[in-house]
Image 1 (cartoon, rainbow, N blue to C red):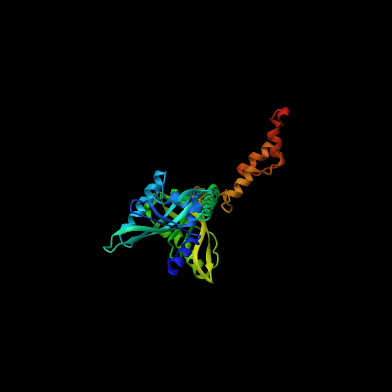
Image 2 (image 1 turned 30 degrees about the horizontal axis):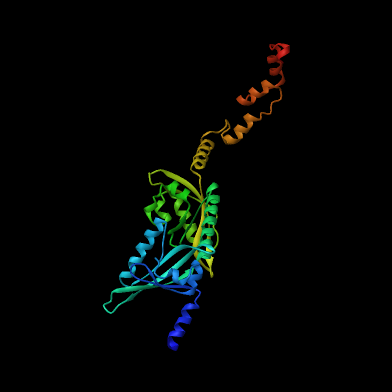
Length: 313
């Protein structure tokens, strides 16, 4: 063995990454020291054994599908494999490349593997944290969203999708697609545009939106621009369904306008207060006088009470 071969072998054997070579039948032709140490088996035992033995059918199908790329340009693929080691189950990311013969056909495959178990655990922890955060967000009355500066929705709370009747395959849409032609919507859109331009938060506003099944709903919007390097890059906000609240407010406004007291100068709120808390001077009689706006004097009161039995006065 010449110096070049020795240097090459030293390079391969001292790698922390796993290096293997296997034939078209999937049997190992070469394994480096790192691979032997990882799986806890001797080199002689591993050579000619089947590479990538997978017991889980789901993972087996995924790996098989990816490895078909080794037989067509660019003759390379990347797969992940969970294997049993002395440290327990570890996830190895394999980068495989085909070795071509003189006739450009595949004669064997070389693969390098790297232990990505810590990355997988971190990703799992992030997913769990995201699920817990989403559960927390979905428990409140507010529903959250983000959209780009051109109004394209990026994140939409599942409850917002349910509220509007969005389908999973609807794809990305602008939030303005759901607006009705109500005049109040123009001022809401203007506030969003102003927040994007200035990078400053605007006061809450209300919008009327149309659901997929044709219903009209009212929402209250509270949002804030996301600014990076002095430029607005997105809008993040929360909405609350105020459809029922709007109906109540409209009903009260109509009642206040239509119902007035006898003088015509005071609204129903004052009238209601006067009925609920009458300033009666003489018991039941004063109460009825206040209702009918009658003037009273002591003589009238005495005349009425003259006919009332003493025990009822």
